[in-house]
Image (cartoon, rainbow, N blue to C red; front, side, top):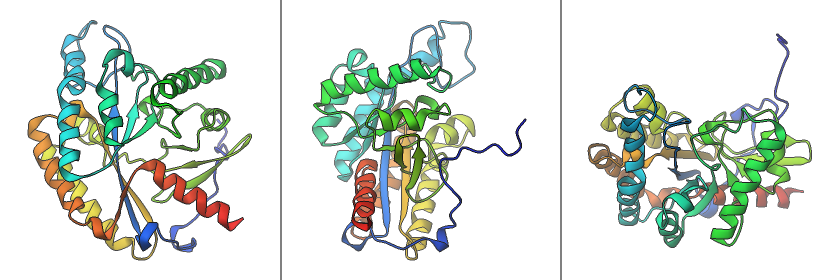
Amino acid sequence: MDTNAGHGRYGYSALPDRPVYDWPEGKRLAVYIGLNLETFAFGEGLGAELAPGGPQPDVLNYAWRDWGNRVGAWRIAAMLDELAMPASVLVNSNLYRDCPGLIEAFRARGDEIVGHGRTNAERQGTLDEAAERALIAETTRVIAAQEGRPPAGWLGPWISQSRVTPDLLAEAGYRYLLDWDHDDQPTWFATRGGRILTVPYPQELNDIPAIVARKETGRQFADMIVDAFDEMLEQARSAPLVMGIALHPYIVGRPHRLRPLRQALRHIADRRADIWLTTAGAIADHVTAQAAEAR
């Protein structure tokens, strides 16, 4: 084992030592929702579990996840409409085939479409470089054909990266990635051909780790969102911060979790005059424009 091994993507930087800047209109806290729209293979591959799965085909868990695309996502869309909140929609490209009309509904809302691999039945980080490059290319091609332009951002299925993922994404034309939850501000990553921006994506304010892994209730998850928002709004007085909220329709789209989630998001929406309620892509664009001006 090499005890000196590192990733070489970014150096250490203490938040209090960094330059202070503003988001648009002088705001200091940027808030975005990362809504994961995912599809899974039947009878094989990866997938979150409501209960320990049995032999394949694991109908219990497959059907639980499939409910999210058939019902939960539509309820979340209605909630976001009610609250006038935008979203960054993290899209498995196979969904255009598997759930026709679903992504189109979020496109009609004006939401950002972010690349999220082909399906969440697989990880990209286990592939060799050629196969990973092909996965990125296929996902990008399908989304671009449907949306009229390629996505600017990427989140790996299962937050999975190989050692060359940032390099491959930059080479494929991606401007930012979401996999790293190492900071409360966007960070520039070094790649073998230049650099790519990372926008903070949450692993705490994320319903899979919170509800599926830690077995917290929908009410506890909603309370986490409110507490994090109130605290970050105060902390943002001294530095610009990013607060992401990661959601999956098959989890928080359920009625008993949707109700407390709606209350938590309304708490945020009611403070929209004090925050930048936005998308991950808009955050990346703002930071990139500032970097260009500083050169």
